[in-house]
Amino acid sequence: MIKKLDWYIIRTFFGPFLFIFSVLMFIFVIQFAFNQMDKFLGKGLNLWDISKLLYYLGLDVIRLVLPLTILLSSIMTFGGFGERYELAAMKSAGISLARIMYPLFSLIILIAIWLFYFCNTTLPENQRRARNMLINIAQTRPALNFEEGRFIKEMNPLSIKIGKKSGKNDSEWDQVFIHKNASPFEDQQTIIADKGNIVSKDNHYLKIELYNGFIYQDNIRGKNYNELKKQPGNAIKFDTLTQYYDISDLIKKSLDKQSEGDNFRYKSVSELSTYIDSIQTSNTAYFKEIGENGLKIILLGQNNQLDSLDYSIYNETYPFEWSNLDDLTKYNLVKAAIEQVKISKHELSSKATEMKAIEKFVAKMIIWQQKNIISYSITCIVFFLIGAPLGSIIRKGGVGLPVVVAIIIFIIFYILGLYMENLAKNQVINPYWASWIPNALFLPVGIFLTIKSMKDSELFDVDNYLKPFKKFINKFIKQKNLEHSRYQ
Image (tube, rainbow, N blue to C red):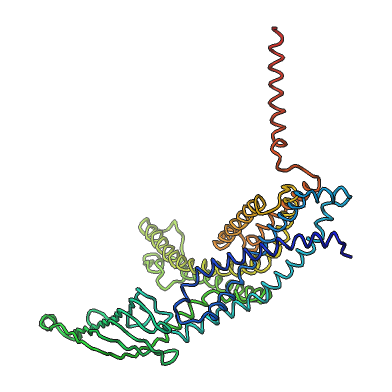
């Protein structure tokens, strides 16, 4: 049965919790919006589409905001209890710190379970919806793929550069430059226009209307040098020019870029486990095949340098005793073997980059599964075990010192997590270990602080740490005084 004291502790905790969570969500989402807004503003999207897309993508920050909120709230709550002497009153009534932490600890466990469920089910679905929105934007608004001041080379054999875009769906262009990519022996063509208008006929073809420009064309195909010298410059002025272009490849590359390497982000823990096991099984078979092929290249390669040597001068059956060979044949054999090893080494080194990329991709999936879906839920509990006793030791509420201490702890935790993640991606440590090392290191800290707080230890009293040194120094000072007193 929940007592009144438990309700009071929970109510006191929920005030800072809701305030800090709202502030942090606002800060993170605003930062995310500023980083992504330039991709959507002025692209013909309405405010509702932008808000919905930012909502889907902004939910990803909850797994970072929630542990930090728990850390801050717990420090502020128990710091406030200590500052108002409520913590001392509870202890004087025979209530231990563990019993005081019990209702909030139970609540944090429920929050951790909810965060796991959210990251495992709700978040992947929202991320998938966000990707679908990006795909729909790319398909229905092809002008989004054209950036100002940059050559678009995906529309082979053309390169298009736009000075400025405006109008509905960015369909009105200024300072249009279109150049045909051709070899020096093919006909050259360049179109320059002051203005242009782009109209999408469907998801794969564009109709471009250009206004007030010139067509510069050199017909050099099949002509010799003398004919080219006599050919005058060919410039055609136009008031209106209509062109049709196939943009299916451009849209496909845009979609592939958005979805490349990110499919695992839309899977649950169980789906990821099955996916990772299948990839690792196929990788094991593939790596084994690479090793066997490398061995075949050394021993049975088509261009094996050892097979090119002439052994006809020897009557013995090949292979024969090394001692029976003359110095020149020995030299040629060693040289041929070295060359064959170099060929095999070059062949395997070309596969090394591919193998590292495969292992890096597997490590990214494991880290995503263990860290972003599971580990952050445990981080909520770890941060509470750090924040609650730390607040009772600091005995300061409000947004002053507790905020500074919490931010420092979170920064250390976050940097350590990034460092472990990079080590795992570079195959330095196991990705499973990398996902759990930050929690494994901070959990003993939380247990240590809880024990110290239960014993009312003055953890941040500097004099307690200086006492052994002072005692050691005073010992020598007393001996020095006794030595001088002998001659007085």
